[in-house]
Amino acid sequence: MSGWKKNAGSPFAREKQPALASRGMVVTNHPVASAAGAEMLLAGGNAVDAAIAALFTLSVVEPMMVGPLGGGVAHLRLADGRHLVLDGLSTAPAAARPDMYTPISDTLPDYQETEGRKNALGVLAMGVPGALAGWCQALAQHGTLPLEEVLRPAIRAAAEGFRATAYLVGAIADAAAELALDPGLAATFLPGGAPPEVGALVRQPELAASLRLIAQHGPAALYDGPLGEALAGHMAASGGLITRADLAAYRVVERAPVTGHYRGYAVMAPPPPSSSGVHITQMLNLLEGYDIGALGSGSAATVHLLAEVLKMAFADRGVATADPAFVKVPVERLTSKEYAAERRALLRQDRAQDWAPGIPPAESANTTHVTVADAAGNIVATTQTINSLFGARFTIPGTGLIANNYMFNFDPHPGQALSVAPGKRVFTSMAPTIVAKDGKPCFALGLPGGLRIFGSAMQAVINLIDHGMELQDAVEAPRVWTNGHTLELEPTIGAALDAALSGLGHKVQRVKHIGGGMGAVRFHDNGMIEGAACWRADGTPVGISGGLARPGVRFNPEVRNKA
Image 1 (cartoon, helix red, strand yellow):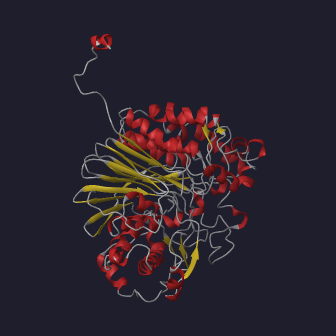
Image 2 (cartoon, rainbow, N blue to C red; image 1 turned 90 degrees about the vertical axis):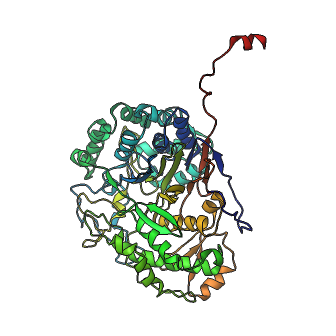
Image 3 (cartoon, helix red, strand yellow; image 1 turned 180 degrees about the horizontal axis):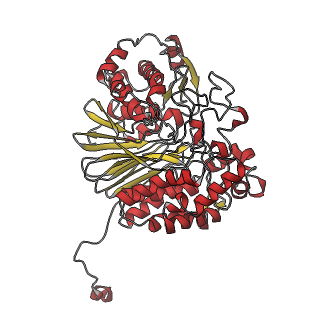
């Protein structure tokens, strides 16, 4: 929106620059995926076509983060102004049970760990995949291009190869010991027994063949076809739980976003089983009682307030993030201005407090996000993952498809609100967020980062609204995070704050980064669309301007001959 002031005197230096365009914008966490989305816009497709092409391509070029066997949440704003959330999160197989894992601890930080790491690695860690169903449903219902065309960039990248980035090579190195145990992963990502060199060509012919099957058969290739048969067969042979019946029974759920109101803006994000809509609204309601802009970005007073509202939200998260088909979630209470006023009355600006958080399960930070907008007014903000880095760290033999380890998101202890149950949908902190004013979209954003997602998204919202930052500064700005224990600060937050925050009672810890690579788009009053991606991933905004010839223009051969 025009009129927003610059982030003058910023204590941090930009590492990237934004893009500005008139006909569309694609922001993803890899340049090849951004190019795939732009290819769809250039072909006359809309934002949904572009987003789904980008996601399929990310499955190839960011394979440690996302894939058809994963899950995720898509927040769509359609050209007619409607908002909807497509929940393609994974579910527990029908044979899953609350006591299927043996926890090693009842307290943090090991609360989520189990004997043999069976909820994190291997076939028992895999939930019924929802990503492919969600992507195909979004395209079929709201896209304009055929699936075969949308898949072409991904198939090309898998068959012909792409160049490995340092980000990918680092991820492979981090997981190398376990990747080496799976023949499919080892052959692709550990050629010669070691990670590829930066810039090396990475080809995935088996994945290309699987993507061609999807192009030919649609989602049925997995949910009632050859890919599903291969998956179920591997499960049966390896002690896994997912059957062809589980695949056939999977359904995407369409939900309405939670809408909060903050200083005249409507802030829309996904509802449970996602944390984001409830808790972003809750935190903004709490912060609305303070002049955050006057307190200043990165000041001790602002960081203290952010820490306290994060702790409050985290304390409520255990009852607000479960699958609403299994647990009654008090959304209206948690998002009400009255509840915020009650909690704000207890908050002290001169002292950190404990807010009696429950013991929530951990969640993976290895996710990806896509934000796309077109000139017609369609917007897609979608966050997708296979959960941990390289998921459950095995492939379905012969397919090149990497399994998710979404079962790690459940509480491994029986008898809890977030415990495993047959058919139960996993919870998430994904926060594909769209903000509007007077009915017009202002900006859309999202990021990976596990538990830290919804807090990071909230901070980007206040960066834009309260601190008046430009879009690039808002996504790159230093972040803070706490779950009620340690207050994490990124390096570019002033060193002088450590003593001030410690004096208020916070236990301060410096970390390399909080959350993952944020991608955002912003809508200017003159019709231009701005895109930005931060330094925490290989994020790249690609904008589309120009267009086709003016109607009625014809080639004149005489002009050529005279030339």
